[in-house]
Length: 424
Image 1: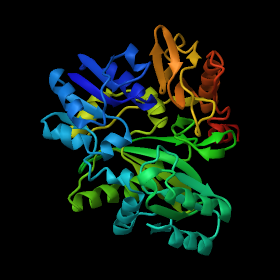
Image 2: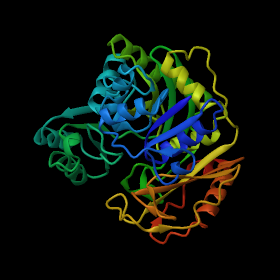
Image 3: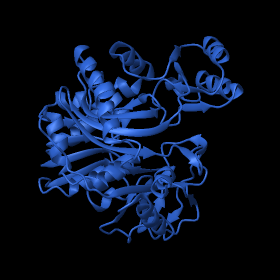
């Protein structure tokens, strides 16, 4: 099987690494890829926003299967165009991808399917949105309706902060994505990520994870695309996973099918586990980043078999096998992230550490001759396995400390909630 992975981040390196291990794969391409994917696949330097260029590459290279990694190509309908060309594709339709492309759409689905979520208001202009936050007060959550690379959400602890967040959206800070705003009640609990494969009708629950969205230790500072993660998330007990499936995933998949927009692909539910049970914060229609990295480290089943069964509508009876070990990843980012990210700094010590219990996935990297250089905000994902979160954390940070990159930084407390549980 000749496979093309779409994307260039740490998620796509992790997916490509897992795909490359399948004996079914005879050739693997990643478009456009990064400095890490080049070591396990052939990077294809094409503009993935140009669907005609993607289709031309597919035809020229006899691609059998396309795997869409990021959110933007899914929301733009790349999967529809690939399938229209007669090529098997893992990823949702443009219509179904609105579960991530519009937070307001997801709220509508929650209303229609009686899915537990935060109370909310949706606004297309600034003054009514400001009136809403002033009426409800802080803490409160302000979200740009569309895609914003994980940065369009403000958890406002004060009223002025909420008002500034509303003004930022409508002033164009997030482009067209902020032209509509969803404002939600502040939920109290513990966040977790749950993943499920869906083929339009059948559902296969995958593993849980816990992301660390804030940029600084202690969950301080602005939101990011994610500064680290671990899997499984202890808060997602078997009972809580069962409730999440029954109360959130199943009614969503059922309602999407009823609307004539069946969901196929991976459904990523961002949850708040409250005293009364799981509540949906938001949906993503792709593997998380950096959650994908820890999932791929733990997955024992051939990922190609899972992705193909999803794309072909044959998930019935599929049961993935997982390692009992914990996986934890630490994101190394360029200083200045998430506000700015200077490119071109040289990274050493990141490419000779891989082992059975450790792997460094590349995100924003590129090659400058023989040198590995930073090429984005989040640059490396140092990912380790361990018998406990504490052990996985120790291995990951030991590897972080061997990376020679003065222009980078990371959080030093990834996994802190789970480690506190282990010590209790």
